[in-house]
Length: 239
Ligand SMILES: C[S@@+](CC[C@H](N)C(=O)[O-])C[C@H]1O[C@@H](n2cnc3c(N)ncnc32)[C@H](O)[C@@H]1O
Image 1: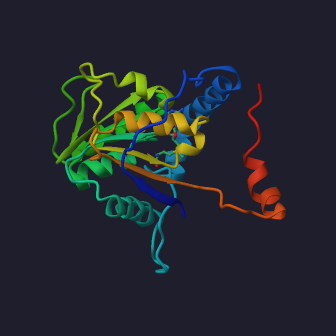
Image 2: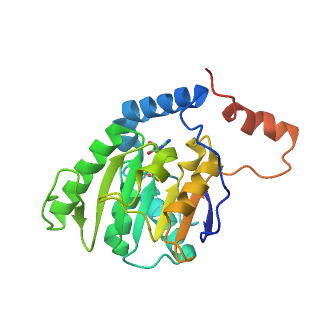
């Protein structure tokens, strides 16, 4: 299962200018975007609305949907993210977590993804769920969709630019109660930049929560484990 880590904001390290868009990284991100643009309909048919793994019990009748929702619930329990929080869902996929947080935890969620196709699917699924819940359509095209008692909105945005994008202007307010990232951090080439941006966008004063679920490499792996499990997925990006 995915490992989970929860932290509160601290003083971020100073990072000189972002290299998020240069050289091989731009090409890598282009391929990631193309991957999700092309495959998200298929992933949806296969994975459902959550493109993340699950927290299974030993009950053989446990379904993947139950397990996926249980993982979100576990993260809520561990992080103690308050109800009605404003949340930035980074790498939001087709919005499954965003809708869960809105409906089950009354949150106002902004989901960002590098894939325009995922934004389109997330809008469609959220509008369908809003209708099922008896909520009206979004008032503006890009405006929040009501998933009572919370709401969601989705933006196509490279997560490595979120620190600049949420600049405090209308619709781009920072000061989130929570930054949530579920099985998307492994896609981000500059991990330090992600943490710097997350701390910048969280509410100041230590009240915000950073909630992370992802696959992590254990320390002190042997050569055989490195060869079998790690090297195949850690190749340098091609130019
Ligand atoms: C495995 S999916 C996880 C989706 C979602 N968090 C969930 O749990 O259902 C990885 C997500 O990361 C997004 N992603 C990858 N690189 C990104 C980037 N640079 N900026 C924003 N999103 C990115 C993908 O578009 C995709 O939505």
